[in-house]
Image (cartoon, rainbow, N blue to C red; front, side, top):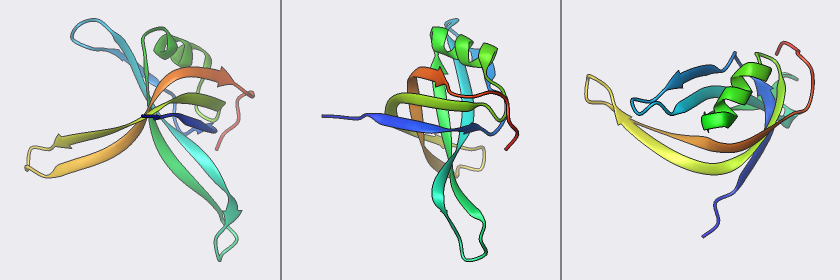
Length: 109
């Protein structure tokens, strides 16, 4: 089977680096990906995509990227589910990042 995702957009916030209980580095961040068209009011439309980066890629993203940075990633799409304390089930899709490339300087969204 094939599960390949390539996304380019701007970081919605500074990426946050943390460690798993086993000491593995992980960074989570959100990318605003412009759809390239406008709505009825003339506003740009964007998709807000969650991304997870691991190990050295997580360190790299947190060191060199910040809110507004243009970033291109490639990886795979992974569904995640979790239950909150009220027993509500949430499901989300996230790109599990394997590589990143800086495409531009700092710019606010």
